[in-house]
Length: 216
Image 1: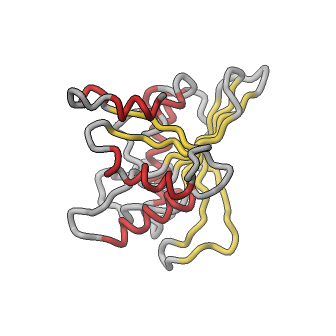
Image 2 (image 1 turned 135 degrees about the horizontal axis):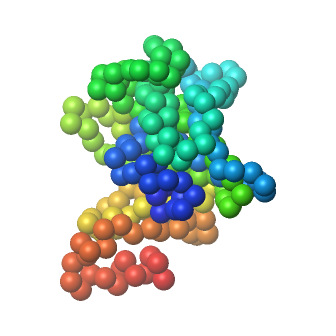
């Protein structure tokens, strides 16, 4: 998950694992509460009827699973919640117990949101959105999926109170990366955009300066 660099050390390693592939928006809410022990509640916020393909008249958020007091249990419930939103024809309660994780999902992307609410006495008050990575094509040429993800990213980063964390890989040219172009469209003055570089060991010799300019 792309939240890894921001959530350390407030979440355990499992929820920050690279193997957690984001297939829907995920909202992490950190809340500081004095004189309380660490706890987490995973919710699902239903914003769209994915079967009919229409937005819901009333957005509803419901608890998914029990309150978690062991940080090591967070990853499993996040995966279950994402599985639930990717299979809208199946009741979300089916994923509270045993289920076949290897089964093919109905959807490859959902606009419904998995919310991870964490409370503790050593946390900052902070809300973060983790979005699926931008893609330009799929193996089967499904341009509708590409558009859905693009639209979701545009919607979230266009909001004037959002801070854009642009994750930029050093493996590819900066100008070719979609998030850079989108950040310039929605935040032309760069007042609410932060660039984060990944894979800096792949920068070719003599090409470091343009990357240094991002973090300068």
